[in-house]
Image 1 (cartoon, rainbow, N blue to C red):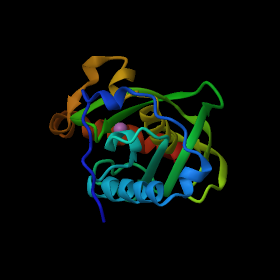
Image 2 (image 1 turned 45 degrees about the vertical axis):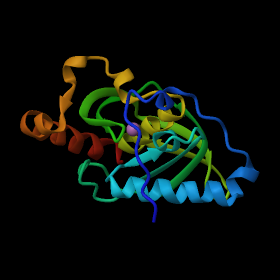
Image 3 (image 1 turned 60 degrees about the horizontal axis):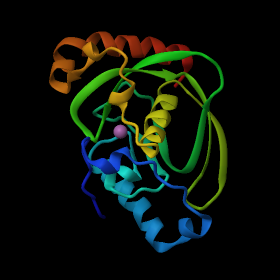
Image 4 (image 1 turned 90 degrees about the vertical axis):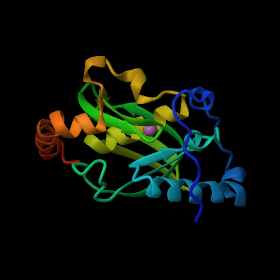
Length: 191
Ligand code: NI
């Protein structure tokens, strides 16, 4: 088990566009080890996902997993998913506002508009091709992680900076209302 250091916003590597991984690279011990490291690092930090640039590797790989996450208890579960070379696109105009956080942005959360319904195409760690529709909070998680591969962090997408809050102040002043908002949203869109 290898837990890697997570880079924090301000590190220039988080602002780079990561490059695609070839199938040969994906099959290599080095990239397979990186994927294992991302899983270990994500789980150790209670992240819902982590992208390779967050550990300083500028390749288009992210891992996603939600299983009764203590940082995001309202998020429906997502089984461990390895996402390589993703292409993500909205399939309609519907958006929602998510209250996002990020392992690379310590202590802060803020409101970010996200597409409710996205099509995402990617390779898994074995190189199998996936073409899926993701909805709701799962779609939000995919969009957040894919943003990292283009050097974008959620702070860039906060449209009203007055929604920024520390996690401590979120719990004190905003959590109850947001959890209820998300309960209704999840009941409506299903994930
Ligand atoms: Ni993040």
